[in-house]
Length: 148
Image (cartoon, rainbow, N blue to C red; front, top):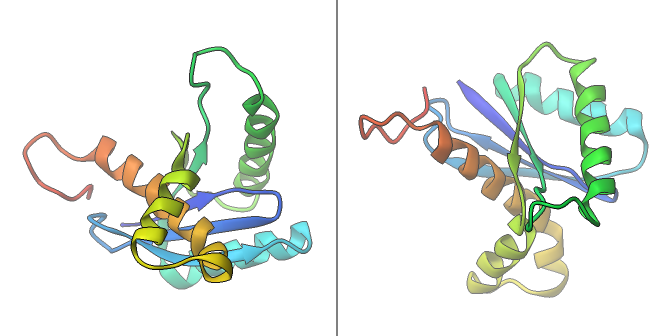
């Protein structure tokens, strides 16, 4: 089963998709937000074209256990997830995305990207990190590297 990972942002939304066995995550797209309808249309088109069976959305967890600045971000992400849930019957899960964008930026810099090119792919790479966090947590204890 393919899984869609989403790095939600107010300006851009990064998408990543697993291979059919749920072993590896790959960047799929960065959607530059124009309208709410266009955002959901693009996401639903990816779900249909990729044969997605589950959705994973990144949500930051308070680093010290006390909600702070990320509380508004969490509210926006949960509202987005609720809106998406009204448009699809697929199961939706959340994983901690704390520092995923910073780590993704580091990965991309190591790969030689910077400036505009880095910004163009950063959100999709953050979605890969979110999806990999989910895949790692779901892997069977028998040593099989795949979720499904």
